[in-house]
Length: 360
Figure 1 (tube, rainbow, N blue to C red):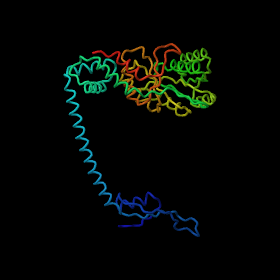
Figure 2 (cartoon, rainbow, N blue to C red):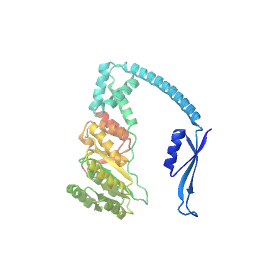
Figure 3 (cartoon, one colour):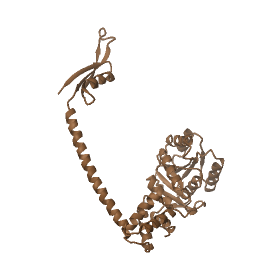
């Protein structure tokens, strides 16, 4: 074991000496600061002293070599396992003619499922059904609904706590129905659950949005505050202390406008908001929905709301959105009527609705 002492005016200088002399694998055993020079303790210069050693360099190399061998063994085992799985997959898929398998994929694409997901679902259907043709349509639809349901079971509506104000913000692109959705939520909690609800709108870019929410607030008889800055948002939330629920409407933001997205993030981050809900329309193309989710993740989303289920027959986007976002789905909306056309999402019903549009 080789131990040496190094001194310098600062730690950076001493570490550089250690690396130069003993190499980057050297170990620092001890450091201390001391004063040098001066008169009667005055004007002394502070110095750094380090004890360093090369001990452990060889053992570290042995550990690295052992780790490398273990990783190679694990990699080999994984490759063998993946090979077996692929062989089994190919054997199972060979039960169905290529043309029939492609027809199954195309039928899944028609309900709004992405090509990658369609291929995976088709493979699961063939493996479970074990049928060489598409004649058993009832069996195929049943398996498809089961597979969809198993991955649509992450459902979490707004949960209120006695004696605590829950603050919820709705975000999303322009035109997805945030303001109407907020009004539906407010009406349901205020009228049907007898909760004390306060409304805030930060959507001051569109005068029509403020007027729309103001109209809803007057009909439901709920207070509404309009805010223009993050600080005004904080103050508005404080004014609602003692309420059961505070709902915040935000301006629609295109995922392609970085400036507007940064402004929205500033609003959200500076306020005491408990949960942020991304509102997405079921009519959105899959590619666009995936892009929206990617960009809006910068705001630290908590849950999803999917609107306009009544305006499309390709509800596979609901499945894709939940899979992509990996966030709970809270509510779905099925029309413009307030407060009727909103309900808590239900996995079996969503799966059944997707399968309705599935035809071979």
